[in-house]
Image (cartoon, rainbow, N blue to C red; front, side, top):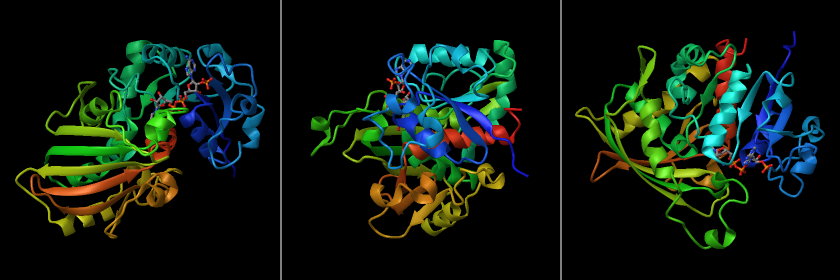
Length: 363
Ligand code: NAP
């Protein structure tokens, strides 16, 4: 028996993340794109006209989307009746995105967002389903507080976190206290959207600053690793994180060099590799279509992971780790890598939506 697919909308469909949604949703077993929206500049054009000359994917625009007429994402009424929920990959002013996403939720259209606008909004879960799938349980409180019926907002964190937080969480889940982490990220240019960082700044260069990124890398894990108490999130303040975020001339794939300090109980390097190899969580248990079969892949080669070779691991949804060794200041060091526009953006958003669907939030 074939299941009827849920029609979804993509806000910011013409951008770097939006194009990845369009690419990744082609032939999705549960979802199909019924609506696309972007800025007023693109509104009124067919999707293929709107992205003409700036389609960045390595596959062609899916046939089913080419002729869809792009709506103005700011006008919610355009989406009504065309989709059951939207993925939000909107660029622009954060406060405007905040208001736009709320207006969709208020019109019974749930929002699964990539944007930072609502990441710290009370009652909005910030999800990495392998870590905190249970945070979706806050959604009824969010709906109640806003007097929303079917609508709600769920978000994913910043792309920089994906390269290291799941491996760190796996160690915590295995019973080890993590006290302090120092992270140095080397982030791909696609993380800045299109056209992003000027080529003359990037070629033959490294830019040791990405606005707001270090704060997000340090603060967002506190909510993700936090808990719900009396209908509210209690942030996990016990881990201290210090981040250096750098933009490097790599197209896709964020790398993170991590030094980590445990509490008094310290696992051996072999034990850590075993924990990572065996780590499975809710998306794997639920067999969600976008779940990587092995969320953390350890590479024994001395010079891996590398963006070009490892970013596409398990459809771009797995985190690749390597170079685990002792640290002379903290306890251990390792290198993590994940695909920023897949696991860190559109693929992560799709996995969140699959979790929400599996748990009945779109019924
Ligand atoms: P982008 O390439 O600049 O695309 C922005 C999209 O938003 C385009 O579709 C654009 O439409 C639309 N837009 C811009 N201003 C608008 C407005 N005032 N009203 C309605 N639509 C508007 O950016 P991106 O890299 O895809 O990022 C999109 C969002 O995802 C951002 O919030 C970003 O922080 C977040 N994010 C990005 C990444 C990544 O790796 N790139 C990772 C995680 C999260 P037009 O084409 O018509 O201008």
